[in-house]
Length: 416
Ligand code: HEM
Image (tube, rainbow, N blue to C red; front, side, top):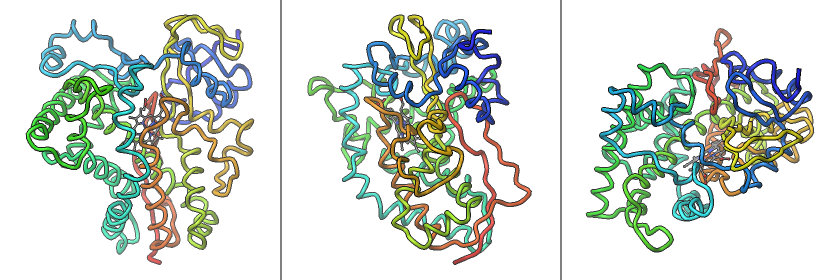
């Protein structure tokens, strides 16, 4: 058996749910390999992923078809019911994540400042107030289901507020996000795909109405910035481009931050000595945030498509091939992180993790999610003691090709 072809598939639901043995075994055989069942290539090695994200002439981000449930447009066109929904909305266009240079640079410039440190620092007080309010909701009970009671509302409300969504409440934003996330999972039934397409249409129509309002009267929010922006100083964005940017900010920002918050609380609850350290010395929290990001890697893998035939780690990747850069595996690579499966909040080189990617597509929301995590861990450490995972809890990471996060986390604790 050729080592560059895996015997089993990474994308089997059972492997996706618990991929650690697979990473280790396959990394030692061939860290770049063909996943035969899906016909895609996968990269597991820290150094090779770092190399790939810098080789922009070889590895392209134009992997749009993977973001719409793996169905290409001709499949959708053949399905009349699906087509009836899709035709009422706007087509998917490449803006940030799925655009290459120079187009990518033009769009990225438009959103950078909205998520830069000065803007994020201004949000700190409202993030802290929200954190306290969410903790107030369950602190007297001595228990909570952390995902639904904290980790979902925190990022959903933060990003909805920044976008300036007044016609949509947090539950609606979460429903839309779920629809986009299910499309990413690569595991939808046709019924779910139909329902997801309806949600996407609802998102598009609601956001279009909001943008029309901003054209009449601008506010201090991202929707106003977008409707007034000029691409390269030359022309306004069209509606499909604006909707693509908003969708990415919403989806990329919600599910991933929810996953990082939940994994952080699980790690603190199961490593009480590390939790005690942040309670005693809050200045350790920024490094602890990085260690949680390294271990959780909620954005577990991102696609690239080969621009041309090119070699990586001794394996020839043919033009047009889909390649998954597995950030989740890179962050557990023992060549980069000693004892990678242990949670060490004082780990020295943890800032070299790839949880936000690297290079031109590195996460635009990284400072915002780091802030949400740091404030959340601070407020927990200050207010909550004796954190533990409920003994009868079954922790489930639903299988998804690109995202990894707990669906629920029942916690027990006492008031500090
Ligand atoms: C812990 C939370 C987060 C994680 C783990 C995460 C992870 C990532 C990763 C790995 C990439 C790189 C994709 C690539 O290599 O092609 C990325 C890009 C991106 N992220 Fe995040 N993200 C998080 C939070 C956020 C937030 C809060 C936002 C928005 C407010 C956001 C918006 C984006 C966007 C728009 C891109 C595409 C950037 C580009 O292509 O230029 N993310 N994210």
